[in-house]
Length: 258
Ligand code: 13P
Image (cartoon, helix red, strand yellow):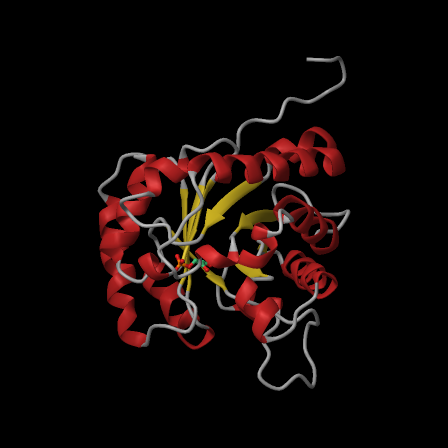
């Protein structure tokens, strides 16, 4: 190691569940079941997070209290408060006990025309409130077919991350749009190629600190493929949709690290 450089340790993995628009108050039984399973472990080698819809978030924070399960939001508005009907601020998420917020999910980029610049503002809002922002990037199938995957990811990272971001306040999630909810996944080699590219871009921008960021893979992660996907180079966890809705499946994915 060159003099003056601080060594950055490999980041602790994060296994995160994105419940999307699923789950009523009764879903707290899944949090209870998950907490119980995790409680039996002497040591949990990864962080565990569930991001439920906003109406159940406060309830699930209470349900998860004292357990190893953290709760986060799925989106936030860039501003603290104001006339923004239907929106939720990062401060509101923090106020009810959220620890993380997902920003720039491809479904929000597509459904709400969110730009990289807006995603960067939302991530910064998460930081302002004391949350860890999970910034999502990923190519569409057409972009992959056109051989544009790495250039698309480069542009999304450039536009969606800010200069003040660091590995403590930000997590990156790579989610190929064509793998979300489809049961299709890239090969381990393809995942490794994109994650290694993301790592290089992070190091190019943030120096040695770039090695400290957690880079999650998301898109059809299931108990059956989690171990293989999590073993790809520069993968530091998962962002899970459908298979995070039941404690049993989600624990099956966490098991990749046990
Ligand atoms: P699936 O795991 O259902 O494919 O969803 C992935 C995702 O979009 C998580 O944010």
